[in-house]
Length: 87
Image (tube, rainbow, N blue to C red):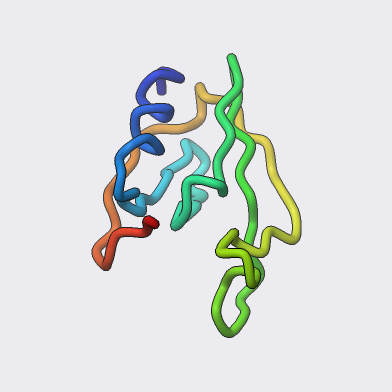
């Protein structure tokens, strides 16, 4: 996937959650724009362990670890149903 496509996916206000599909079959739900950082050749994805409210008291997701994925392995994105996140 082109880097610009992922950058455009995290820009809308209010943010619309989406799912990343990878070539090896993995999926990642991006429920907050703070969960994804796009670099020149990769995406750094924040992993949120299941918690009661899913974010810290400041409104940021409680990311407990990250994973790096080469953009060549992101095959598609799909908008998730549900309410949009935003201020």
